[in-house]
Length: 236
Length: 276
Image (cartoon, rainbow over all chains, first blue to last red; front, side, top):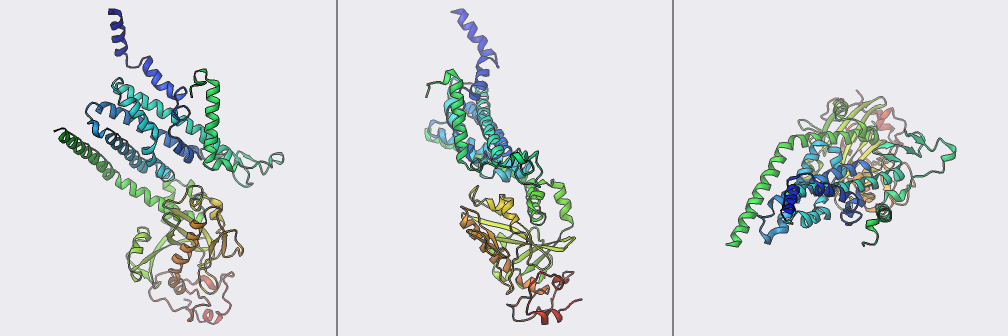
C-alpha cells in the first residue's frame, strides 16, 4: 500500500516519463488524428496540392492545438459550465488570428497562398476534439495537455505533408517548388521527359491536382497503416 | 449570482482577447503595409516580365526593379493628374467616387523594345471581386503580359486566372483594341477562334472568365481618352487625335513606327499628327 503511493508519487514527479512519451508518440501512428480518429480531413483535401503550404499549415496547426490545449487546461477549473464551448472557441479563434497576423508579417507570399486555410484551422475538428477529449478532463495536467496538442498536431502534420509530397510530385512533377520532372522542353528541371525519348510518354497525373485525389491517397494510407499495425486490425 | 459570474467571465475574456489582438495588429501594421506594397509591385512586374520570373524575385529585387518604373495617374479625360501617387491608388476606392472624379494609374517601363505601359483593371468574378494588370506595348494595344488576382474564386477553377502561368501566357501577343477602338480582347469559352483578340477559356471557370472579359472591356476603355491623347487614333473616333493639353514627357506618340497597328483610314490623322 505504501509502495503504491510511493510509486505514484514518483510518477507524478517525473515531467517527461512514459505517459508523456506516449502522448507524443501515439498520435503519430496508433492514434493518428487523420487516419485513425478521422478528423481534420477538409484541409487535407484543399491545401495538399503543394508541399510548402502544407508544411506551413502543419506548423500552424501544431502551434494552435498545443497552445489551445495548454490554455484551456490551465483555465478549465474557472470556466463557467454554461459557456464552456464558447470559451473554447474564443481561445481557438484568438490563437488562429495571432497566427494569421504573424504569418502576414513574416511571410507574405505564403500568407497569400494559404489565404482562407489559416482561418479554417478554427473549424478543424482536431483542435476542438482534443480540447474536449483531453484538455477539459481533470485527469490531465496542463503540461500533458500541451504535449498532447503537439503530438496531435504533428500526427496531422506529417500525414498532410506526406499527401502533399505525393500530390505535388505526381501532379506537377515538383517538390517544394523545385521542378524535378518536366514534360515541357525548355523548362529547367532535373529530368526533362521531352528530351529523353524513352520517357516521352510521361504525363503529369492531373487527377492528383484535384481535391478528390487527397481522399484516395489518405484512404490508401489508412489501408496500409491498418494492415501493418496489428493493434489496429478490427478496431473500426 | 451565478449569472453575474458568467457575465464577468465573458467580459474579462473579451477584454483580454481584444487587447491582445488589437495590440498585435497595431504593432504589425507597418510590416503588413510594407509587405502589401511589395506584393502589388510584384504583380505589376509580373505583368511585364511574366509571373514565374516575378515570383522568383526577392523582396529587395522587386523594390530595386520598381525604381526604374515611371508612374502617372490619369483622369477620365485622359489628362495627367499631378500629386496623386499611382501606387497607392486603389481602384476599389476609385469605384466609389462619381465617374468624373475617378483616377487611374499607369506604370511605364522602359524596355529595349520601347516603352511598356501597365494598366490596372478591376471587375467581378464568380463569387467576389477580381482585379489585375495588363502590360501593353507603346501602341497601347499589343499585350506584353497580364497578371490577375481575386478575392475568393474557386481554387483549381476560377483561381486559375491567378495561378495558371499557361493561361496568362496566352495573352501575350494578343491585341486589346480593335481597329474601331473598342476593347475586343476577351476570354472565349470553348477555345479562341480569332487568336488576335481571343484567349482560350478555362474549363469549369466560365463565369470567372466571363468576368475577366467584362473587366478587360470596362477597365481598359477608361484609359482610352489618355491613349487617344498619346496620338493613337482609331477609325471609330470621329476626330483625329487632339493635341494633348497637359502632359509631361509622355508625348512620344510612337505608334507611327509600329508596323502592327492597323490604321487603314487614318493616314490623314497620321500626317497631321503633332510630333515634336
